[in-house]
Image (tube, rainbow, N blue to C red; front, top):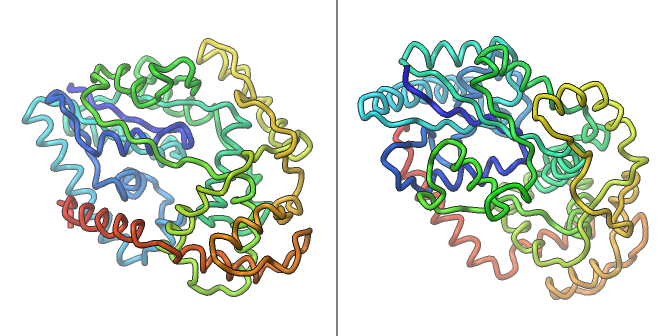
Length: 372
């Protein structure tokens, strides 16, 4: 059988950077990325093979009606099927990158394997494991940035580390599954994209490396979290996807330390990891620390109240960049409505460059969707 490279995450291990870098083009005729496009490429495998995708709580799923989901599924199936047929005809190795598969159950992986086998392909699976506390904190920040949480408690749900690899081992065979610990110091030039390319036999110079999903300072996250309390109550559409993008682009300029959780806030998370650790360390053949990042005591978060404690410096920065007066209070309990209004204003100030970039990307993505 021919080889297909299946990259399954885990999330927060440079998966989007890998996808974006490969999507920009591969200057090696031996490899070809199979993806709908940079926006929906990661969702293709989930839509087709996740048996419970109709009930999935992702933003992508919530944005689709049942009718549009079925339409998307039919078109994604035709595109994947056609892409694999063409890859076999041309003698190239297809690459499928989908961190959504990290949440697959055994039956989901079995369906995907059968689909590939029926078309003459056998999967070699690649995944990365991030230090648990670093993953947890990065996931939290991403949820705040995207506004994809319903309550503080939802942010502390249990995460799977060992089980996805165990399931992949069972379905594809452990010899065909290559898990790596996500430690940039072990990667060529500290880059996971280069490590991934080198592992599958693709020269890193054959792709243009793109870095995405860079974090925000603690003050920026606090502003977003505080403003979203208003959004959750009002249920309006003021924070549209475009406006959110414009806002995040501006907040990246807000300086300050990064966010870290205090040990007291993650005790339950630590305990949930204990049973998974011995197997993971044996499978990866190395010690896995809880965190690779240095602690910043001044930036530690202990509770939800700390996320609502916006600093005076952050309010001063916000007032300066929106051309408005200082907030009426800078302590705990600052009016969320004021922050909400200020961030709406900030998103639209000098946004022409970001709007032009969003429009250009939208046109490019639309042009590159052969499945429509």
